Length: 238
Length: 273
Image (cartoon, rainbow over all chains, first blue to last red; front, side, top):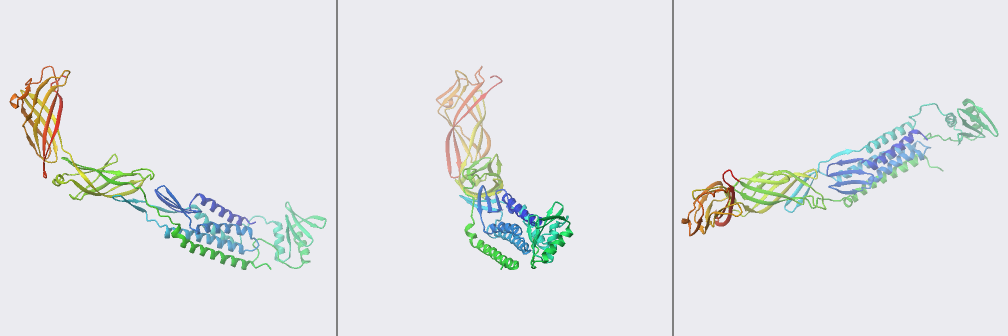
């Protein structure tokens, strides 16, 4: 599992958890305010509180969850990252649409007028529109998902490479079928497992310690004896 | 056969875009039914509490009704505003003294002939911290307030001088005096003089605030039942009370109105107690 994909998922969790406490969009004033929460618009008017739930608001966080979970569940193809980007953009679109809903159906002009027995009362209720912190987290999610899509979730690719991954890459390049086992790979009749910083080669009951070069040669030898197929690497395929 | 990732992606993309579009359309459809309309209920309003016409001017008191009454905790704090009296055309700004809204207008001759007036205006202030304006129109009866009181009394050589302060909206004729007496404030009390019957002394005062002086020669000539015990203050007594029941005729444009009132004054003469 790539750190980059986990980061994307963490941003989704941060967005939703933050949103439970902080509105993504609000118009705040002394006696009148509208706050966009995950369950709808919370409207406060002189102590009265009403919740107006436009259905699109649920799509915002449902699409966001998809954008975070998909790269963790579907790891074979890079299309999972494309789809996650689409979900994050849809989530943002739904948020914008929900804000437009407020402008269209919950518009507020900053005052209220009520009749009285011998006249009327005019109350000025100035409000200030504010984009909340969760919205910026969602924007960050969109940017990260696009970045992950472009780099195939490999922009954190620093540090020494795992020797097993190196073996896998060679096998994949040669279209040799292999299978993953715990701590290593299995090709034909041999297994390469990681043992601390060195590699172990297991053939039948025999087990020897090998270096990376030997491990690669041995797996290629074993692999070429079997039918050519496709290997498995995270987001490796088209 | 496992479908290609491209096909899965295209399928899910199209499906999710369709879901999004249906949601946008559906939200627009149900919008009118999920929106809740609210307005202020039981909001505070302004009523004319009293209109007092005095010789110093006309005082209009405005009251804030429904201020902070449950169940709606709406509290209006007035800060300013203006009123207009429809019948006289006068427009003045109000003043707020300890939460009471008062408008003071100059007294014009029209006021004397009116029984009630229409008052309209706007009172500005804050409603639960938000700037608010209450517009109102109210018809309220007028109370004309005339006051007559004794400011000073002196008695010497059987001559009684009574200084009256007269604050009236219309001209008045003060008099006659019925059953007046001057006695000491002591136990027991002693009369200085006492009259039984009517003393036809009258004095005229124009409208407004004036001091007028009644001068009465207290002697048995005033009537059969006039008892004069002393022509000066009694020696050994310094605190006296004047008892002055008097008739007052108010000369309204609609006709004269006579009323009887009791004026009293307790006063101290000399330096003694």
